Image (cartoon, rainbow over all chains, first blue to last red; front, top):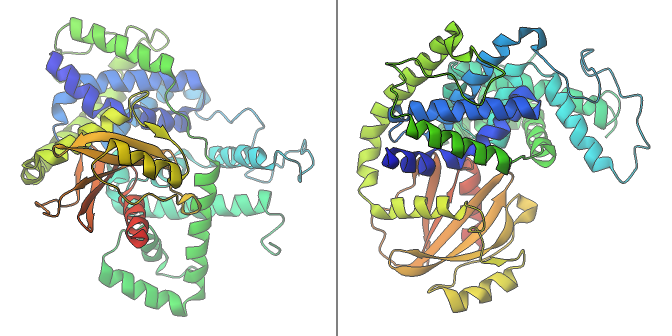
Length: 181
Length: 266
């Protein structure tokens, strides 16, 4: 038993930060992410014997995603909670009216917020593949394992989400329709 | 409207294609302005995301809470997930029926089943690699380094500070350089014990990932092939009579990128 615990701490817990980051992007509210991650780690521990030598990170993130889906199903009324800044359902065109002077010293943090908001406006399955690829730096096979879809689907989701994010980003941050840079 | 090659171009960008396809795609992109633009866009999205996404680590309180929950879990005895329905989660009062939903079972079983299958396959594939105890040592050392306060002995982003520090603390003097503009920030150095010697470890940060570059003396490459253990990639190479190994949970591509840069420094 102690041995199992030690192996678990050695193989799975190092990926706790990745699990948490992933959960934050799946559910937004930090409290929800905490619950999902804790739930996932406990389940991972119970099913730990199934892991044996395979990719612990993909495995843990898979369980995080399952836990998130289960929890989300339970609270269907809030299938999607936008980040606090604004309601962005009008798909990128709902510009923040409160923009401070755009040349201000806080441009970088503005851009951070904008990116997070734009990410939030993507459909969940798109956001997920983007995060796994660009931030967690997983390859197609790992992403396919975590999201339970074929590699072809991973590729098309990646393509669509990247194109969507780029278009929104250009529109909001770099001025009007891609003419001037 | 969209070039039929766009998905392959994306796969090329993500380094998911072999060398032959890569050459084909490069040739294609020379003639296809749309795919050239696509490559630029992909790079732009990547840079933007890596620059702006907030990398949040798990809060210490959550980590502590999870460790406590694991203690309790251990105390209640080993429950086999497939055989017995798990007990109600203790600290998740807000989602009392979580475990009994059908979605949970279908989700978990497909996950665990898939993982079990993958584990069975991986077990055989991984066996030969496990023969080398050095691989284990390196992964363990990497994991140990990620524990609080263990990562770095000398904190510096300046190679002129890190490199001399090794002179008194390790048996080798590795290449140390900062590649912040290329996305690999030098954050410090550490001494570790690898392959019966005092190894010099240079620590880099790439986005949310730490990369430990272990170095030790030894000209003989005893089957040190690139490998993956527990979700960590290990990339080996040699420079002069120093053996290098970069360990990280960053992507393969990103680790190889650092290895390339370091080799070019020699």
